[in-house]
Length: 206
Image (cartoon, rainbow, N blue to C red):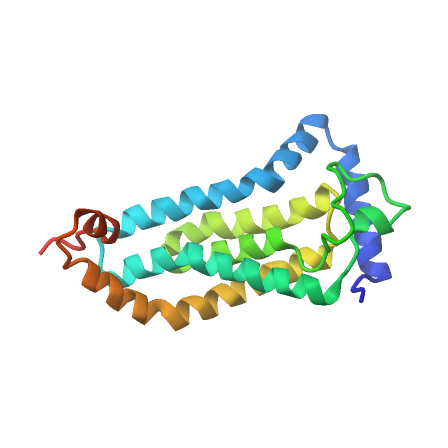
C-alpha cells in the first residue's frame, strides 16, 4: 500500500533540493538534530518531573505520564507502519537529490514518521504538564518533523500525519490515566520509603 502522490513527491523533491543548496553547517546540523533532538525531549521530561515534585498530585501525574504517553504514540505509529508498508522516498523518488543521511533499509517503512509521532506526542504531553513550555515544545516538534523531510528520509505527509497521530494518542492517554496516576502518586507521597517519596516528591508545603 502506498500513500504518496505527485504533490507530496514534488514537495519532497523541492525540500531535498533546497537542503542540498544550504551551507554545509546547516546540513550537518540537520543530520544531528533529526536524531539528537529526541534527547532534548528527554531532558524536558526530567525538568517537568523535577518541577512537579513540589506541586500537587495532579501536576506530578501529568509530568510522569508525559514520557509514557510519548511511548504510546510511538507504539501506535509503529503499528500503522506495518499496515501501510510505504517505501521511503529516498528510494522511490529517483529524480530527487540524494538524501543527506543513509536511506533506511526496505522494511523500515515510511508512513507515518515515528520521529514525528514521538515529537508530536512529547510536545503535547509536556504542554499539558507544563503549559508555558508549549512555546518551546511545539516549534521543536514541528522542526524535528521537518528535519525528517529535509534530510531525505520521509515524505511531507509522513511527518504531518506522524505529528497528529502522536499528539492525539498522547492526549487520549493522558486524559484516560490522569486520575489513576494522580491517586497512585498521592498514595506514594504518604510512603515512608525514601526512594518512593523522592520519586513522588513532597508536594506543596503545608
